[in-house]
Image 1 (spheres, one colour):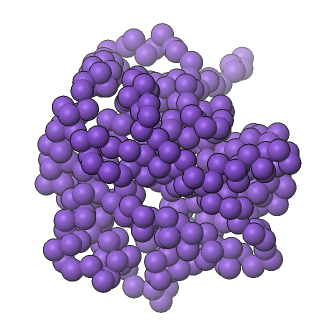
Image 2 (spheres, one colour):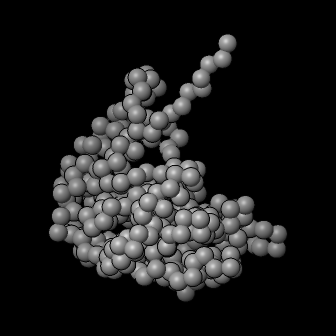
Image 3 (cartoon, rainbow, N blue to C red):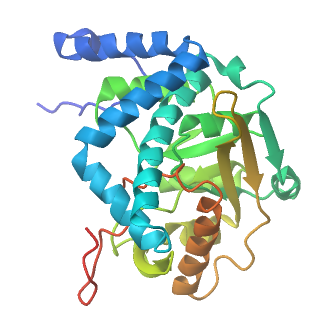
Length: 312
């Protein structure tokens, strides 16, 4: 007797989510919803407190952050790296509250957002081109996606959460922002949406080893750099457009800017290493605008082939 294997459908509610093992997560979800309706002044203060706690107790993440900053910004003093490292954690916590606002109180962003370079997306779509929006893992999280959605219809490539209830929550909240959510393993779906002319946010800025990439300089240091987007662009005939968003101004009354750059020329080329190097240069240039609004606590240089010194 054969049985059909269970297939989890993203965003769907299952009665098993009411079992006791999920009760603490439900409580956390309700707490997050309450935090989302707090005034920004209180959210900002809570972010500061939580950032200090994380900086003190998440020693591994703190160490990784400082190592990354040392590698990428060697001109900084030890004192500046420490100060900027703490700010990374602070921006991460602010980003969590900004994401909650995007999910539950999106009107908070009204009159706070400006955009530069929207014509690059508009022109490409008018020509029927699909677009890979080459972005980064920003501490703004889904707040960045929301502010982009005020000007065009973005889709996103995502990695499912390990906890199915949390995945359902995130998927449903993101459904109010993104036109499509495409599993990072669903290459067929990604290509299909690109061929349909979608603008899809894709972040090629993490270390997934050399099975999916090459060693290319990132801030002058060799780093495993993914190259899957080259194949996506080639198969779908889409174009790559750099996208960056960041917070600026007075933190008590912040503003947000979306920066869209021209199509990256001749991508993909015949040189995989050159393409990876160019992409890393674009990302590095973006990150210098607001250095602490990047997830530096990820081990960007964890892959070290023979002959390369360990970073961490």
